[in-house]
Length: 72
Image 1: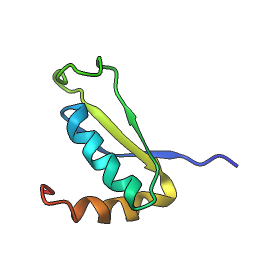
Image 2: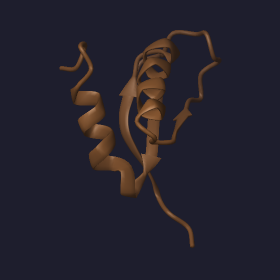
Image 3: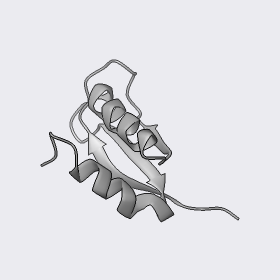
Image 4: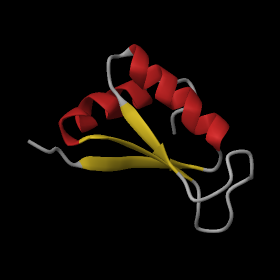
């Protein structure tokens, strides 16, 4: 059985995405960071670091991200 990955947020750089990925992992949610940029380069226009989770984890991941102090 395959399960779809869903991009739940795009970040301007790897540092911000990595911090959220650590929070998700602490909550037992596995995620994947996707980018076409070199790892330390700032994101160009219309690009960034995408954070994807399994479709079954989208709601839990959203609630974890809402609990972050920097959540908008």
